[in-house]
Image (cartoon, rainbow, N blue to C red; front, side, top):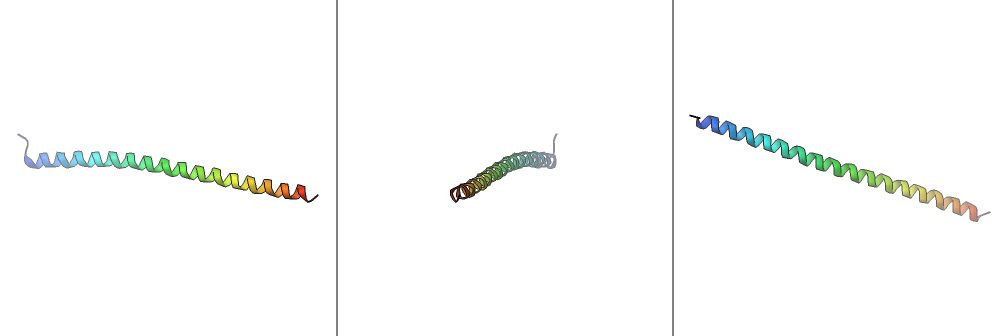
Length: 64
């Protein structure tokens, strides 16, 4: 026969394993989201630099 203490220990163990699994999955989701946002911000910054450079070249060409 299984004692109440052993049942309690098994329950706590299963809950801890479940929590670790879910926390790991959530961390993976958050990490992917942060990576995606960072990538998009970098792409946007590159676009801004390209537009600034093009505007500067257009101004230089117009002043000739």
